[in-house]
Image 1: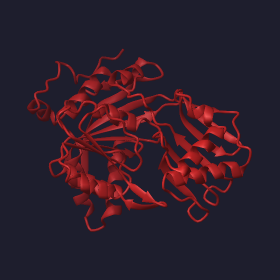
Image 2 (image 1 turned 90 degrees about the vertical axis):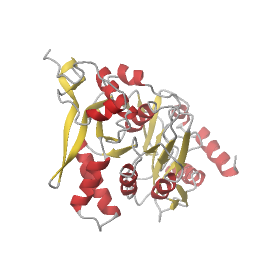
Image 3 (image 1 turned 45 degrees about the horizontal axis):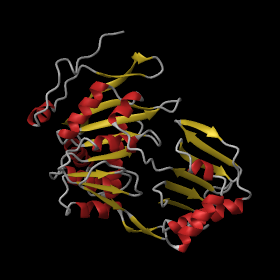
Amino acid sequence: MTSSRSASNGLMLASPLQPYLSSEAVSEIMVNSYLEVFIEMEGKMIRTDAQFRSEQELETLIVQMAKDCGRDVTPAQPFFDGRLPDGSRVNATLPPMSPKGATLTIRKFNKHIVSAKDLLQKSTWSQKAAHFLKSAVEAKMNIVVSGGTGSGKTTLLNVLSSFVHPRERIVTIEDTLELNLAHDNWIRLEAVYQLSTPVVSLRDCLANSLRMRPDRIIVGECRKDEVFEMLQAMNTGHDGSMTTIHANSARDAMARMESLVQYSTSTLPLVAIRRQIANAIDLVVQLERDPAGRRLITEIIEITGLEGDTITSHPIFIRDMNHGEPSVGALVSTGLVPKGIDRFTKAGIDFPPGHFSKPKPE
């Protein structure tokens, strides 16, 4: 352990955040100012009584944490995003970016590997939807998990990855390590920064992963020009790849991918970009966090192709508030059979009769 890392650990131990860092019940710590600390526990946002003694104490902690992450944070570079030694993800800002003072957000690394059964108990998905997505992974369909911040995208990606056959080789690519796979043949690649300057980008990692004989490529989050590389990989034989993206709906996820590819390469016409997306992506799974803090899949759509210059799709599962618990509803079949049903058949996967039938009103 380096001296700087030891110094940071000492600061953390002495900080008012320590009780929340050591509590397994706390999933996120949010410092809005040195006098205002919130935590997320069991999906609920709670204001604590914790306070730093001064703005300087908070800034000192942030500067040391940045050094530990190989980043630099100064008034000229007033923010950083990195990973703590325990795997927790950290983001911090300084003035003038945050005019009212320094801020700090820590998303704690979850050592517990969430299972498909856990998601069922939490009403994240239904038995039928879980079986469908498990089958989609086994049939090597390309899946995009979409949702807002804190909606459970990474957690779902971990669970979907657990359905990959043990003999397959997985390469995961992340800006900051968050994925926690229960898989033996697994290689992790992470972007590298030096004083906040990317030395190895996500796009570099993706390009390199193609030379590592992967059966599956999983990108923790597509945010910039790596979307173009991801689509290229999906369109050149790397079936069964998965990624996440920030979007408010499954359809919005497609529009966001268009925008990110345009950001990456302005030479491709829009219709060509849409054709690449339509050919590459099989399913989009949309997640939301409800007011009670529950992470719920709200829809699963199948990308069916391109008509003219429009990406076509249809919903396979939707969350229906007329079924299940009144405040949560249930993720139910829409009555539409996937157009890609042949993919499942070729993979030796059969669905029980009525699996895609629309449920009768309760």
